[in-house]
Length: 336
Image 1 (cartoon, rainbow, N blue to C red):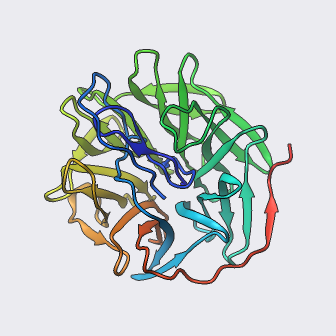
Image 2 (cartoon, rainbow, N blue to C red; image 1 turned 90 degrees about the vertical axis):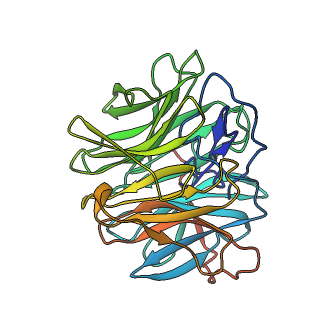
């Protein structure tokens, strides 16, 4: 995930994770909250104040490991699969790029051909990757027009909702079903489900905006709903049933990871200005307790991905922390 979604809390937001939308993801390049506006952004509407630097992290069996993409100024992990592969986004002098990191730590850069910036959001067990890109600017720019993509065995497929001003793909399951968000001509965000070129719009009833951030093999979907007052809530869609939830004491709650066990990961802000994020895990689903996910000593932790092994990936802010050494060899997926 990768990410580029910085948030203008009461207007448009953009979760900026070095290129991951989540995402959006997406390491968060923030902006100053603006006065309330008619259209409330969704989870790309994930919020964040402008930090000095973000690093990627992996949480496995309670152990945290930080990492940076070599030469990057921001790194964020958006998702992982049960094979130990991790995708995300980063920012470097060369621009904003997606990345694929295998179980041995080897890195592959992910750039959509012709794009000025790319972010990888999630990966399934078949190695299929979804994310988003822009040809009009940078992903950190909330005014850039974004398009979704699917990368399958070296081939890119564009994911666009017909008539949308922009489309961002955030998650893919093993059935090839993709979820994300799109912006309509009226300035409203909607969730969508894409499969083999067919698109279905999904809106949470009563919400002013809907973003879908994760889908598992059971067809459960996690996401974020926005209210007219600017509040953001986590949401789970399961066989037509909608359940909203909020982290204890949180003003903003964003769900980004969902595995086949029904566990959910995400992050929340206690203040509406979104000045410091705390990650969370719902190990027993929406009916269970919130467990904090906090990189040791970090000023902020954002949990973006959660696989069936219970591994959580994301980004943390801590200028004083020293990430683990990383290999410097690269391959490229720019072909085709």
